[in-house]
Length: 322
Image (cartoon, rainbow, N blue to C red; front, side, top):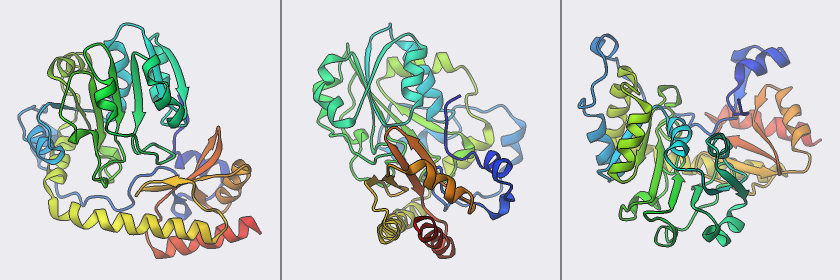
């Protein structure tokens, strides 16, 4: 298993700090989850059905017609490499490490490169995997890549797990064979525990992916909750500017503490620092969990839930640097 954020139970055991005393900023998940209403008993009692309105809500929200629901974008990340014969794959790095792990496990020749270098060398690969905005650097990939890369013989896979607050999306590009876009409701909607994501692609690819994933990929309660969240345009309209403002405030807080971000999105800030491992440990000993990256050494900070937690982070940063 690869390393991920959100390992709060492990942090509790390691540092001996009670769970309720932790400030977990390690995931990039919005601290303001969509408010879940009561769930109908049938959602728990009956097998899930594909015509329950979830896909209609997703088509309206994402503005595309050809998509399927999956058990989090992670399910698609693991399954997609098995739908191609072994080939040369270029993947952005640093980035969500599960992409390279999955393609290697399926027998592909994988090269990982920083975003700029990968974009310079895309013609060397049969499939290119990008994350836009990138996790953890926040870099955006140009939409014009679709014309250059996506086609019957070459795939362009774009993971847009952090794109819900962005105007620019690969879903706005006319659909074509070879373009695969992954979306998640875990980050913007704060519903990571529902384990729901979507894949937009050409129909034949979606059919093959659905057959590989099998029936009842999503639990009934998750389908019910996510369909309602996708339809709640008022909440979405309020949340986008709020997250942008909080991300800007976090960037200012880090800069004032002497840790200016080198990248980020509306849901996290990314700080490269040669001494990242020591800083990560020092924050953890103060009950603040952030995400550590080794290559290059860096920390990712999720959004604090409120002003009190922002103040707590500011005090801890000053103590650590002192």
